[in-house]
Image 1: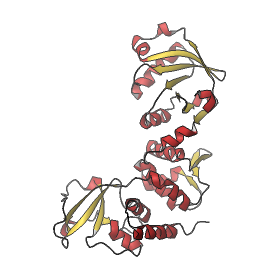
Image 2: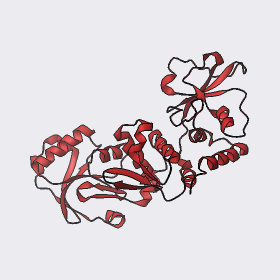
Image 3: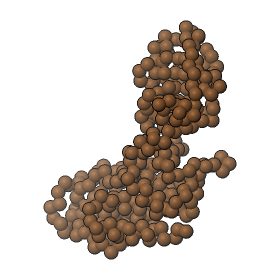
Image 4: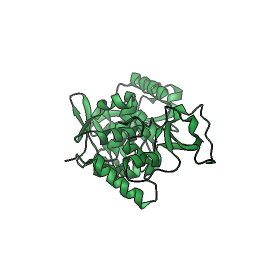
Length: 316
């Protein structure tokens, strides 16, 4: 399988005559070759072992460029999602076997569709899932990514990683208007939610019980208690609350339900459960649904479908 076949690139490698001018530690880190990519002269760096950390990598690329001022890209056989996003964020060119090429000096970012399918087998990151939920609550089919910052309070780097993961699912198109990036969909939000279900992450990272008298203002209704607010499902006998993980430090949870009438169930969430809430007493409907998708109960499935229809009933 050649990179030319999958990505339309022809890479011709030759010996780099200036290897002798390199510091020894750089020569030990990389095999450096002269490269011709579709007629563009550049340098190819193939790691002999693991990639150096970002700061060291940038420094070594700069030193090589001081010897010869040509575009540089890194040739890799494998790459973690974290390192891939790291290279993309820092505009460091790379070619990943026959799967992906990021060559900004050629205005090129190509992905083998088979790699794209493989790359999204994992769950969304929490930041990408929050961006998805934010999109699902918006009107229309075009979504300016920067508009999400008011709600999500992400750093620019986190937001970039989030929207890139959504684009990698194949459900979004990335476009620009001036300098602003926006994502577009060509399906309904109902269809988008259904297609994204396999990649949704349950935000609950822990559960436990505590006395009703110790419920704090930072806790909001969740689980079956909140679902009864949004549907015709009866609430559970034990009230269920959600709280962000940052607010649980001084709260001691019990692992067992001992006195049903005097205790409540607490869900510890990976993000603030009221981030999208219009009613400050309850988690929002879409976030709640992500916690209920694994319920093996036909009543829940039917009520979830009805709730989704209600959420998306203004679609055209």
